Image (tube, rainbow, N blue to C red; front, side, top):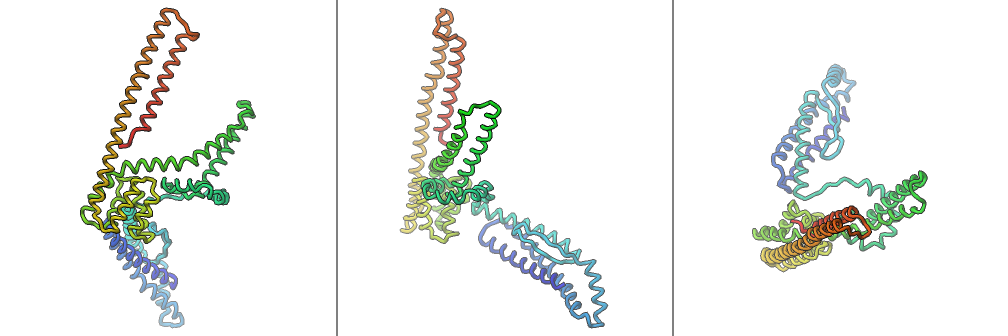
Length: 424
């Protein structure tokens, strides 16, 4: 009984703590008010149910502590027999906090408690999702590949990491979620795995006679290719992120200028952009500004300057630096953002015009090479076949070669156009 009473009191304290957390959440976030209200009512009902069980448990504790009193012996026996029938001890794991909790209640109260518990836990889950959507939080599960790689190669990667500082810079600017040592560990683990698998396949094929020993270099070539991919991927991703930021920047600047026009506090401008789903890549950079303010405690000007040094896009870096100077000097944010937005939009339009001119040039080349030239060769093949001329190869062979070249040229043109095409 004493242990049950202690656990119920602890449960009441935890319910009060949940109520306090709920109040703090609603003061900070404009979340789902309906979920907040239902969770609050449910927690209060849970508190009442647990509190109602305390007198009965306390009475049992008092009786068990006075077993020598003959006048109480009958009551003790009756209550103990009643407890065995009416009181239930159970535990559960809270989905919101992943914490195991214990409580002792009457059987009838237990049903009501479980019902209210489901309501409050669902409310906490909804409010958590609301908080994550407002903060722009992306929850990722830990990488199993990174964990295994660190266990096997963390010592070696820590030793060689000082020689790859340029790779570390690319990882940061590409917004890849790996530290340099972890990334090197993954590269080593994958490369060793490629060597083992490819060497095993080569040995099996050589044993069966499908491949000659002269090709023993193939597994090592695959390892070299794997290491090269890991080395050049961050820089390639950095350039891709830089390009995407340039495409989003005009519209983000216009959006920020519109918000600044309402004389809102400057920090909130960045919070609004950070949670917007319209700016996937700029949003990541702006969330860095918000995190520097709310998590690391920097002021807005310092946060802007810090992120400007880390971003891969020079236009965005200049914009953030200019905003920092503008804020510290008390300038007009709306006017500054509108001027920059106009400049970015002009660059955006010029880029589209350049692509249109390039597409026109490609169209002329395509018509000349892949439409006119095949028709001319087709006429030559017909004349050669009629006149009986020969160049050492049969007409059928030349037709196959010509068609193959046309197909390959079309594929190359498609890849070039896709690579040069700017995203909308």
